[in-house]
Image (cartoon, rainbow, N blue to C red; front, top):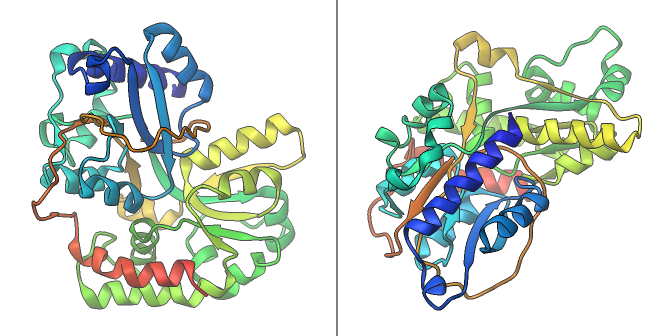
Length: 339
């Protein structure tokens, strides 16, 4: 399934690139500028793309939606293809960052999963600007053997209790805990744990969620949105709140390394109880490239959707799924990354 999704994404990118030649192409330089999450595409896929199309890829990576959005909102980022998470995609569409897809040039759209395409339409009405790249959830990844040592052989990690009750999380402190450096993922999880709407825009409710995260902050070794993948795989840490795709990657890498580390993934039961599992989608965009750097940094695959970008500096107001959580992001970020 994952390999098929990568192939579809690559073909979509190729069609988009051919449909709207960039300045670099017009000068005879076949270059595609891509900005994506770390650990999302195997370098071998990029090499195969270049071999089959003759188009060179300049591939840069980011670790947070905020990093991506800052570059896009500044205008003239130079990237042809980017991969925002679904709700950031919605904000950026309203800010008029992206150009509509020319679907007549994208024959492989017929291979997309209709159910996921419909879910993506929540953020991109009519699927005008984006094509889903991957879709996943936010949950708990953990080292099975270490969890048994900490909790006992019959214990289960199936609730946010493990994370948001300080006395429970403290039991994992010595073997290492990482959490996402993303207020847009951690605060909704905290809200859901408190029995509140994970999409709440209420300032008092968001404060309760921020206070809850503050209470566990001293127990967390690091807040980072990609390093936990390898840290789990090598046994450096034993518990992480992260993306399903990353945890599955960690699982695979540990198995390949034959290092005796067994990784499991859990979607907390609180999400199921409301029918509102916290899920993530991401997308790819197109814009006229005006790059100031040609640095290339690429790692392996993870989870997201696809779109095209127009180049004007956006001036429209960002209509986020909730503006209040963005207000609290600054507070939450200080909670997450500063001691």
